[in-house]
Length: 337
Ligand code: GDD
Ligand code: MG
Image 1 (cartoon, rainbow, N blue to C red):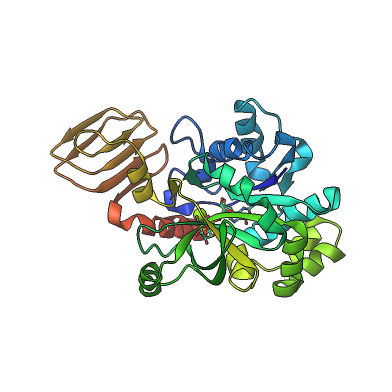
Image 2: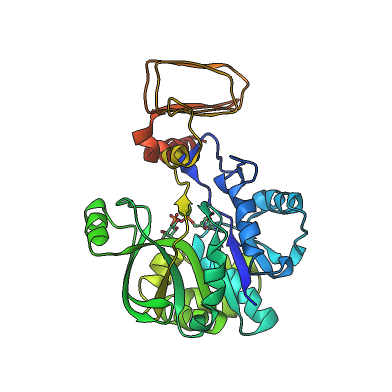
């Protein structure tokens, strides 16, 4: 049996104004279900609801509980871990692993981001990898389709069972290196991991001793979080450890990191427009994404490849190719407030 930790504390600023600081993208209902709900459903393939842990924060707690209830499940209250501040994924994962180790001793734990799309069948592969996790920190690799600079790149080396040993892991390379890595057969890091608690804490002690010491020496999560740095698992451990292995996933995977990715994911009409939630009047316009939460009629004339997102208090218009810059709006708005 594998336990699951779901990371649901990120803010997803690249989908502003749909996602907000207090309403991050994993809880947005772009289809019937949110990405968070899809993640929970996937975890239920390998874990019982009582074995699923969600690391989040006070302001997102009600989304977590409510959206799990909508799926027809009740998650034990003590499985929802609230961080006092967001310190990126290494502290969040350690928080969950620490609790599981305290409650159950040694155990196998899958770590799941809640911000991407993935076919359920991948969970069987993850389940089958359990035995390898007592020796390796397991990552799951996706064959890249573009030199995206927002991902981790993994170079598979010698095969070990269903996995490959990893000699090189590079988090968020520049475009030049990303192109080179793709030529050299690197895989994208999917943002999911399978760890055994013992191996995880050994590697944490080696590469992030400040975090492991804080969890050992302090009682309350507030004290612990005050002492530890802001760092992701990728930079903090996976890039450095010599115990990393990767398993290739063949499933469809997509990180809905920005509006351009959303556009690619959704059904298009005969003019290649993606139109969500609104009445439209579109003339000679192709390849646009239009999303409205206001009930207004949206009209486009002679424009191509644009993003138009209308909400009650904010309107975004930008070319699809500038999707990655939307996070700058969100962060400069945050600075002003
Ligand atoms: N609880 C909590 N606290 N969750 C967090 C925090 C935090 O401080 N920061 C991020 N998360 C959650 C996010 O909500 C998301 O579900 C997941 O952890 C991953 O964080 P991202 O911030 O989205 O990471 P990334 O996309 O830049 O990079 C990671 O994912 C890529 C694939 O999508 C890395 O693992 C890359 O190597 C990987 O390629
Ligand atoms: Mg992400």
